[in-house]
Length: 144
Image (cartoon, rainbow, N blue to C red; front, side):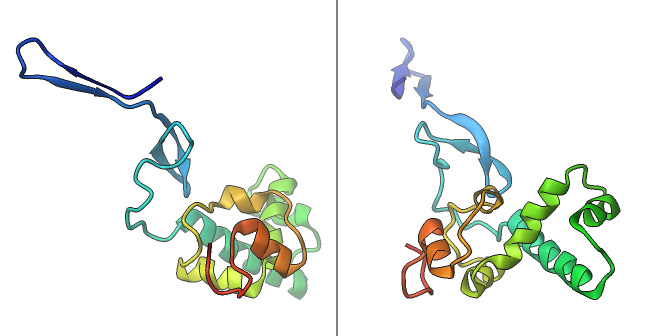
């Protein structure tokens, strides 16, 4: 479908049709263009609270594992009321992100197109490959 503009016969009503769909971006419902990008990607968004909370949670769980409060991911899932230990393990994996990527998540200076969903899929253990996969320049400090 293409965008269309219609003017009423009386000239007092303009109807604009823009193909779009509802979706999620940075954990929030938003309007997506036909290419799948947010309609207003340049808006000044707050930090992605969902991603930030997941990173904080991952480090808390990791500390609990190291200190012996939890003996397994199943214990984490049970204690946190998470139905899927797989979800808990994917969150815990965030602790394996390169330190500079974690810092950019904390300071909200990472590419705005990245969401928690992007980090939930398996990613490389090598930090250089992580930076490449998630769209960071080789100098480790700036997003593409």
